[in-house]
Image (cartoon, rainbow, N blue to C red):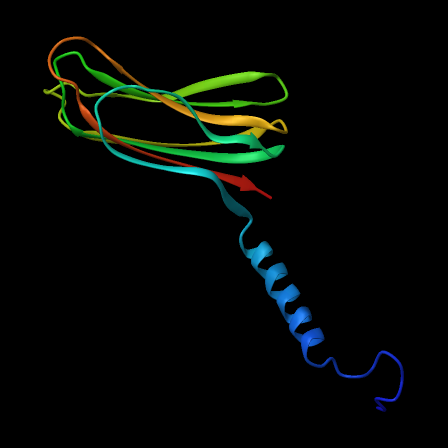
Length: 153
């Protein structure tokens, strides 16, 4: 076949590099249907409640996956509990969900739970997290919190 015909010549130099780079990006997008977004949270040694905090201040509209891992590393007083709350705004309106509470009392010892939620975020709205520590007797429990947000494309 002749390379003298228009469009049948070989790509050379930067043109070939651009084509290969585009293919690599396309394959990566297909292999990674989710993309971590927002501020990752990796907290340890926590003893107090954490007020509502943005993971993403202006989330792009569409489906997101929110994952929270709460670990009680040192038990607290007799009636202590720790709860994590995730928040978002969807087509219905602002909402929060407290997927789990861990008993942090000294008799219960240490423990953990993980929750993964798939939510729809309306465009330019915040995805948030918070914790609460309930109970008044004895010492505060010590906990660790990990939270991640992925945008599902």
